[in-house]
Length: 383
Image (cartoon, rainbow, N blue to C red; front, top):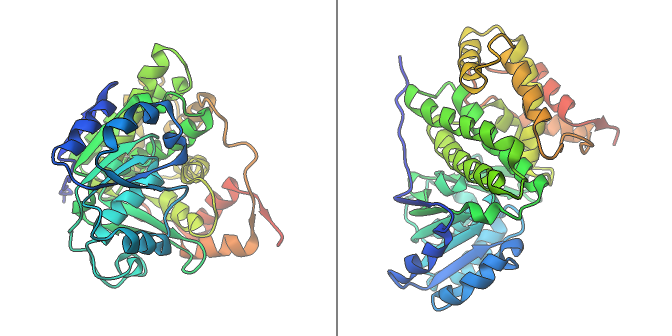
């Protein structure tokens, strides 16, 4: 039976070179006390220096986010700002957007954060939240378009889990490729490969539909066009960064509709205990996953890989889809983050392996296959 798909999307999405300038008008109508979530790099940028004077009449405070928020941090922010902030603006990478999204709903909920978290919580969110505007400064997570907010606790719970509700999709997303212009190549590639992984796993998901795969395909086509030129400082570079930002937004829509697969089933568990960049984790796992795909006989998986290959690389029809894609990604990356991986010890390996899962993959990957993916991604050393 064909899958049915539900799409929950931003009420308004503003995109284009001058789109960031719309923010001043948006927070003035209506004029509400607004709490800004952001990151140090944006707050030190020339764009912020030009923008802040027009926003300050409505900004009542700024929370600087440096990593994925923990339940404890969120509870502290809620305690400090509940009843004072009446709108949230989040400008930054995925961690910033997720923190702003989480705060926007938690300050209208009666319980502490852990009660609403997937995996460990016991209470569903009711959908109440403050008005929310999301402005990504990286192109990877697609958080400006998703129904979830990632929360990570590596100390007390050792869990990386989501707050999730359709109402967590921000009211307004501003896609301003100008904000990517001065990002380091390492950031652009680590975030970009996260966006691709969202699109690719959603394409292969058992929950995908004809409808959802159109979004995934468009996003991957934009990614392929952008990937080799992300760090260029000319018009081609600007066009590439606009495409990768659009691909990231489409990745957020795709994963919300179709879910993700074994790469994220492992990456989420690694992120619960290791302080690694999520995009790099996904990128490292992607290559051994493609190696597994090349050897897999599952007919639906191979059909989707072949269809995708014909769309993305029509002049290489005879190549092995999975092998060709892996080689192309490495050869065309502007930063080879696959070199010099960090290490895992045996106890960390076992913890990740024991809690990993296949999520919405077409195949239920076994322990041996997931062990292969982890060992191929990170060296395992004695404790």
